[in-house]
Amino acid sequence: MKPGSLASAPVGLYAAYGSNLDPARMGDRCPHSPLRTTGWLTGWRLTFGGEEHGWDGALPTLVQDPFEQVFVALYDVVHADESTLDTLEQADTGLYRKTRVRVDTLSGAEVAWVYVLDAFEGGLPSAVTVGVLADAAEAAAAPDDYVTALRARPCRSL
Image (cartoon, rainbow, N blue to C red; front, side, top):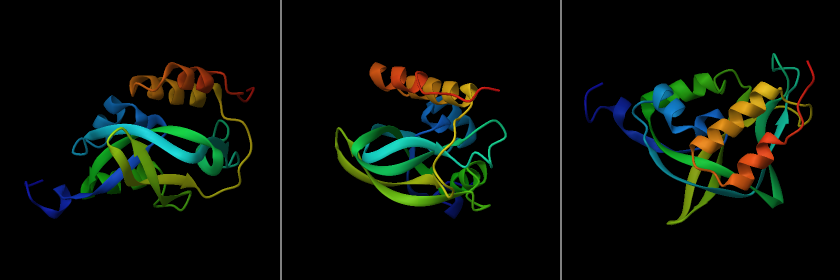
């Protein structure tokens, strides 16, 4: 990819709330899209749904909830990495869709996109899924109480 090419041009901010919270994982997946900062999606909560689509349980997603907030990592995404993310997050199949959100950071509010599951809320995730989410939040320096609450989420019995 040549510097200054369309593929390396920033397309916007992506707010990761799942496994992509982990900067190392995101760096492997989208090497041209650096971490900008972390913050909170106020008025949203992390939940699970689409159990019929997941091979080991319900899939992570977000839903609006005026009393909750979700810890996120903001990445400056370039065009080529956006395509990679769309594939990894199954947005190209319609399983997830992009939604624009406002993220509260220490330097002010930022507008970013998140991937939201296009399926009904409900069902339990696997212990592996919950562990991956908690490990990613920990790697992104989420507050200890947030990580602890993730690890305490109910899981599907296999």
